Amino acid sequence: MTNILEAEHLNITYETGEGEGQRAVIDLCLSLGHGEILTVVGGSGSGKSTFLHSAIGLLSDSAHIVGSLKYEGRDLIGLTEEKWNGLRGVEIALIFQNTGLSLNPNRRIKKQVLEYAEAHGMREATQVVKDMEALMRGVGFVDPQRVLNAYPFQLSGGMLQRVAIAMAMLLRPKLILADEPTSALDVTVQAQVAAQIKRLRDEYGTSIIFVTHNMGVASYMADRIAVMERGRLIELGTRDQIIRHPQAGYTKLLLAAVPELEETEGML
Ligand SMILES: Nc1ncnc2c1ncn2[C@@H]1O[C@H](COP(=O)(O)OP(=O)(O)OP(=O)(O)O)[C@@H](O)[C@H]1O
Ligand SMILES: [Mg+2]
Image (cartoon, rainbow, N blue to C red):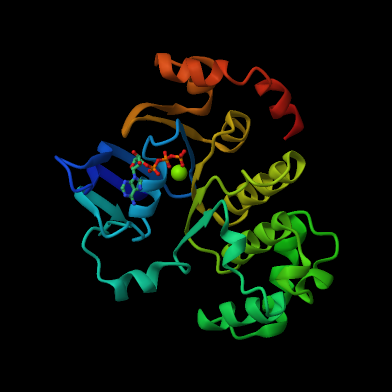
């Protein structure tokens, strides 16, 4: 398996106006294979989102990035905004907790889907709608047509999130960066959405980095699991290595905090 994303000695620091600033990612060496699902777990503030943002050019201006970060062998650090625009959405997509809120509340979903698709070169409207409906069924909509004809204000937060996730998958990006995409959804819908995202890898070989606080979801999704603590990668291994034989004390703590792990796995 060749790598789609490679971080080598990646350091990201936020300027805070005082001292050295906030070191958010420290000496990170991590790669993601083509068609691999890596889940990233770790406490709040451990640098998970910062790492994902660096891989899609969405770090805030106060962030300084040093080291090496490559996508398909191409350097991502220092890429111009124009080059990023060519990659974002098309090759690399980011789904985050409130992705659904990016939809315009005053325009029908279908219209927004068609515009989004057209802006990225998918002009065959009938096919776009067909693809979108299939993806929507995958994230739990029984009647996608009705939802496509609705306005966002007529849908719940969870429904909007699922629409937006389906939209992100529509362009078949090669790399999906998911930052707690299901955290705001209820448990059964979380499982459905996680399953649909995983199916993309199985059907299209999409590579995925999935950040989650839910060890059950992490374990269900992952080929490998990365554990981060205060900016550092403290443990990395296959799903079974991490779940069955964790080495770091911190990983053991995370696992101990979810006694219902087996139960969640059963549900998924
Ligand atoms: N825009 C910013 N400016 C300054 N510091 C930031 C900024 N974004 C994040 N940080 C800091 O960088 C560190 C890593 O934050 P990050 O958001 O990457 O963590 P996280 O692992 O995603 O946490 P969570 O699980 O809460 O989402 C934290 O100390 C945070 O306060
Ligand atoms: Mg985060």
